[in-house]
Image (cartoon, rainbow, N blue to C red; front, side):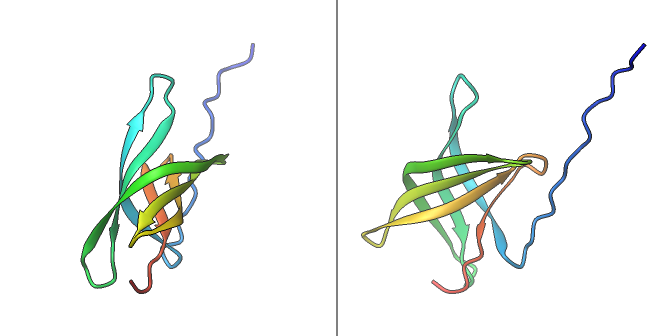
Length: 100
């Protein structure tokens, strides 16, 4: 008789030399779909900016995480931001900002 074996936890290590954690305000639909609305990004000078997300260009399911490519207007210019949600850790990250 086979026994139930729970799935193995798959925890991906986050490389903090490349990524920085961010805050994300989001909307979760009835179907569980996540839609980021605002990004809260800490800058190297210890200040924080809030970036309103104009839209989501792509969403890609990866092993243990979800990659969103967001479109946002910053300083009057449309820009793309890649943000990643790590499911196991419950953390949002983006590429580390070296200067602003």
